Image 1: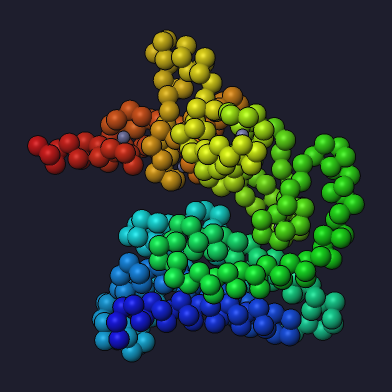
Image 2: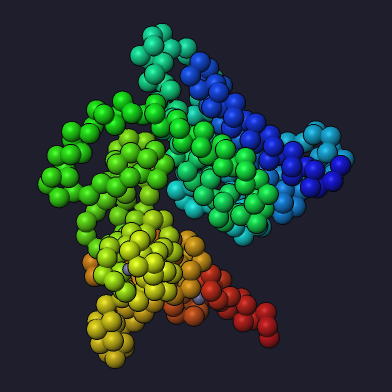
Length: 354
Ligand SMILES: [Zn+2]
Ligand SMILES: [Zn+2]
Ligand SMILES: [Zn+2]
Ligand SMILES: [Zn+2]
């Protein structure tokens, strides 16, 4: 048994469970929830496995290869996996991704202990719709992680990924009734100038957007509940509206201009105010660092006086200054004189070098 075989096994089981979750949805919703949860965990474990097999094992046990290949070990929990993905693999989950997966775990634990069979077909449809909403949004996140951030590891499963993506997305038909119900309301709001776009998870034109530019907001889908952080700007090349979701990487749909967090910072910063402030020795307009995504100089003060990270869209109403390097930071800087921030080592690092 080699490491690659174990990785293959994990991933193939992941696909099996996803397919079972889809098959069981209508007649055995309880098993759909359990299988879907197992699949999510397997894909996260597979990413850990690709880094090192011992990461898959619970922190309560000593890693032992023989026990590992015979399957007699306790595996890492969702939160434990998220922690290791962040700290060891250095390719962690965003807050919205983790939250969406935690919902899956919570629901799984609930149905294992308290599931009650539906007493009517209406009740059954209700159960199924709730599950579909959850699975569609979780899959939206998982699929995007597997095909972009962790592409190097999961590229070889391109085909099955495509297949299962198609199947899962087709589940949106279960939500048609939800969309039909709220459609008149959406039409009304559109007439009043509110913006709705096609939801990347369920596909209905039900994702509510702000119309104002250069502020981070939550774009929520009224059908499936997907909630993303979003930001709109006018394209610096052609002037058309460009929408960013969850991160500061994007492309203009009209002219093809590419944007990265640095470009967004240039757009968001009030250059006049920053220039005057700098001249007067006021550092409150200096670019800051983000403690959430480790972004360096990605935090910019926006017109409202708030601070937005152009990499992960974290928005806070104040920044603190690192006691050692003196740069603005979105995190808690209480012990920074000694411990530093995520971009300096503080006095501790200084003393060590001596
Ligand atoms: Zn949706
Ligand atoms: Zn453009
Ligand atoms: Zn950030
Ligand atoms: Zn610092």
